[in-house]
Length: 307
Image (cartoon, rainbow, N blue to C red; front, top):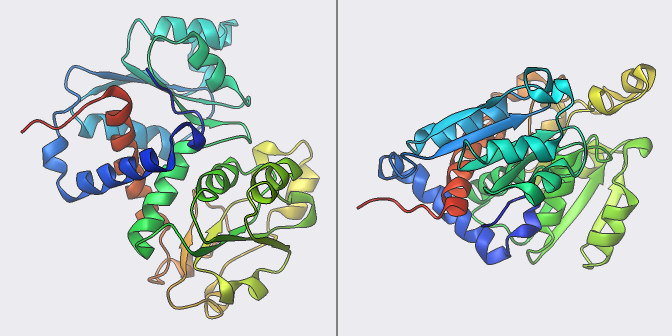
């Protein structure tokens, strides 16, 4: 039994196999419509979510499986004080696989230690979001045809952005990757990510506060929102929330083959006027998330399509 708590839980070869399976599912979804019949996915969401939770549910239903679970801490026994360890012990009696989102970093790891079924980290605090990373990688591979030799601009909240931390971890294993880190000073990428990943692996990177200056050199621009729920001070959030707003004028500075990704939800960091730009890929990204999670569920459960 394996879990998926961090992008590094799978080797590069295994990640590529999951992405290739996702592409096969996208091309022939009908071949995979019954592979999970008789299987159940439990979605344990202690934190609000729209895309991730519904993407997991859609993925399992598309595979012919069933879904059970809860969508907030208050609708579970956690409201009565039940621990994550006890919850997963119970869920292991009901389901074949579980996806857990939790505001506390490390909660999915605790669940995995006590679980009798595969556990997928659907986001833990500001730490990791590995299935969003699979989604991002599938989107990039779909648009650019590769995951090597790319300059990736990461813009916005790089301090608390778990999607950013996961993506850096995953892409740093591919050759020719370079990062441009665009953020306010107080939302810079944490030192431990710079030291333990970028510098340890000798990945080229540079930090800047200027989005316009960075745009011309990018293959991918990964925008993120400034996350109100990660701030202790409302005043600090209000001061930083509009640090970067991507609009039509800024898009004119970008290469014609630079694509814009965003894990969503957006607030106002991408103007709606950008939605009609053919380089706006964030809604394609949402669709890729279903295929990526279908492929991951199949992989962890050892499922194969019937002839």
